[in-house]
Length: 373
Ligand SMILES: Nc1nc2c(ncn2[C@@H]2O[C@H](COP(=O)(O)OP(=O)(O)OP(=O)(O)O)[C@@H](O)[C@H]2O)c(=O)[nH]1
View (cartoon, protein in one colour):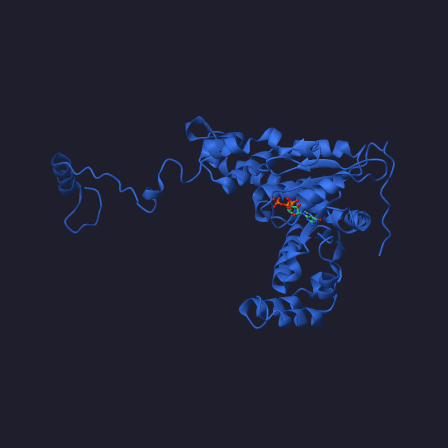
């Protein structure tokens, strides 16, 4: 395997980009606490550049350089568009992602002073991982900076083998979706040592034993237990090259090992992933250019060509497309209205019926062929 160039450590290097760490994990796993802990870590003379992407958090417990809450008021979004909390978070993130190109420019510049950029994401993992905005954010970052996905797992809750398996399946799905270097951070080791989790990953038998021993819990021979058993086999490949370490966001234990893994992952990005990302980006751009050219060719004259900018920014009635996008399907109707369909008003006035019958007699032949007289 080709040796990768080590990353420059000079703080004066204008072309150096920071290593971006996207912090993901299930609600309460400790993403924000871990980000706060990283915020205090000085590496090569600098602390990380910090980005908060959680629009709904009451306060950010670290000095964020970029905070989504400065751009999008999540409560206002909920109020204006009649959304619930989760709809508000998704919409706020969607709005922010339209500006993410500018955010990346700031992050790129930050590379001159900061070696790492830590990006904390919303509490509900699916809001980021399975949303269009999450994909835009991840792809925009990965196309310009070394990017690593950091999956924070709650080591205390994962002592249940079924919960552990749920975490691993989630982590695996994110790894294959993002196709980026990946680190599993087993958090809260000040409460429970993560050795059990490492053993379950390395030794299939020990995980099976844990499931058997969990007979009274969700494991044993229950449906979830059996599913976990078969999944453990499927995940063998995933575990093989997985980078993982135990940390405590509270005490700072394990942070040095984590930084070592991050540096390895950044080299891996340069060596194994960057070329793919650049290729993917070039292909996407080529495809877009081809599509817009095809559209022009298909439509021919200027009159019939749909203006692309008009399509993107405006819809019928002159409303901004963002307004339409933000409009919640439930807006303007109470919950009691759900499921009732408005029937078109029928306008069968007697004079209209007579007119129609006269028209019918005049124009339609008795054999109902529909041909004109
Ligand atoms: N003992 C211990 N508790 C921790 C640690 N990290 C986080 N916690 C606690 O776990 C809880 C959740 O931590 P957060 O940092 O808010 O977790 P999160 O994943 O950001 O949560 P959401 O964004 O709200 O989903 C808090 O009560 C933290 O104090 C740790 O390393 N050790």
